Length: 203
Image (cartoon, rainbow, N blue to C red):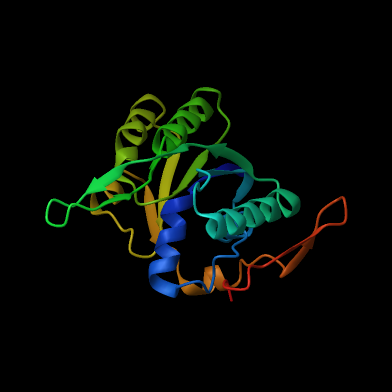
């Protein structure tokens, strides 16, 4: 069996699902989704999930914490965190200012993990779930240094990139059926007995 690792850009996936399906499939089991993308001769050895913690938005913070706790409780995913950087947008017309936080480090964290896993021979097949073209250079480096490794990309809805598709061995679009069949249970009990429930707005 060929060893496969998935590298999931959490916010890229989230906003793609949000744009296409609103809140319907956000309670997503990314490990189950990863398994659904494999060929019969491939075995999932790790699912790596990359995200940043939302700040200064209590409702969103609560939903994100619940979701990440649910993944940590019910899957064997590995988690890697970037950060949110507070930016201020100024309107020259009206003089108003408002915060516009930007996620930082996710693409660097993904690139670092993919390169480390290549050099330590942790996979035969790498599957990227993202449409971020900033990941083209590390993919090209891996293909140059380890041509025997296969790299593919599965695009979230509204995140397709022709440029990214052109540098990988295979690609696809994550469709509705895979999302629908890769949902977490509505209620998940933590080891201490606390029950994590699908957020009410994620129905």
